[in-house]
Image (tube, rainbow, N blue to C red):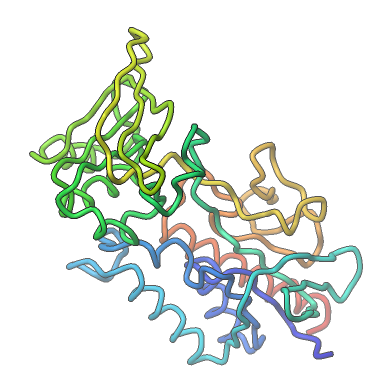
Length: 309
């Protein structure tokens, strides 16, 4: 079995930036892409805040450019998700469903996944009106009533995108003010097709057995419960770190985010590094993930050099 200098787990902005830097350093990295190759940005339409693109760029195109740049310098790619890892001895080992990879160093950049709301009917109607990706499914709800749950930038971005398709978009938010950035909040509040339902939560999703038809909403201040017509129900309430394969292998906090030392990418296992949303639950931006990937690659390169090349 081949022994690689470094295996990078994940192919979002963090993983691919790490791949670019590692490849340029001559480390011939192998990137385990994950089933969602390219990370969350492949489900994003306009990326307006990534430097260098004054007119914005589509998320899938941006990630395709990341990948091509990594390939240009010699990074190799392996499909699938890592399902298990062993960092108890060297060389380290990670497994996908189809293969085992051995490496002197590992960079974990598996990102995070959308958090489900956990209400009645959500699982039942997943893929039949319940969605976690506006850019994936918005087209199917052209001219129909749409509901979005959440109050952060992701939720408001979803609402603005869905307003292109739906007859009306209702944003349900449990507080009386958005957590989102000011510019995103202003865009939503200015939109004639978006209605904000403040201080409210969705308690359930209902349908006709084939598709979603309505959601049940409760006002948290008055306790009043009402139903709202709905063909598309989009959940945008945060993310869960993709760290299941590393549970018990790498230390994580109570929410499952990997722990790193100070401002570095070093985990508690010497030779294993973490980058991006897998440990960052504060900023969670493409540019901060890319910066974390750069940091992890440099930390990894210096660690390998200290180990003897």
